Image (tube, rainbow, N blue to C red; front, top):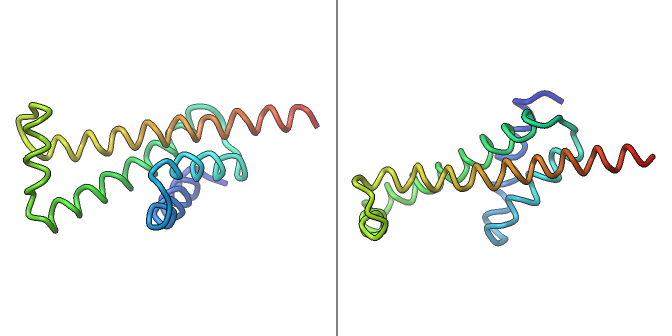
Length: 117
């Protein structure tokens, strides 16, 4: 399965799971999508990074727009960020790192399981 399809699967299933389950389920989604569909090293990491990063960036951006940026501005001040949009970028970056490393974990776990068969 190609990179684009795996990224979209992570994005779609991550969105669905985020509606009903805790935040950390995105790690399970990324790992399972890559474990089932395969992938190697950096390609898997990048797929999870982009999929979850876009998901969290999108959620943060939508929430920011719907609330008139009230909370974003206050939290940005707490972290001494010069502009509230940087908080949205950091949110996407943190989500991307979680998704990337969990996708890499799924890839490495797949290699271990397939090696033992």
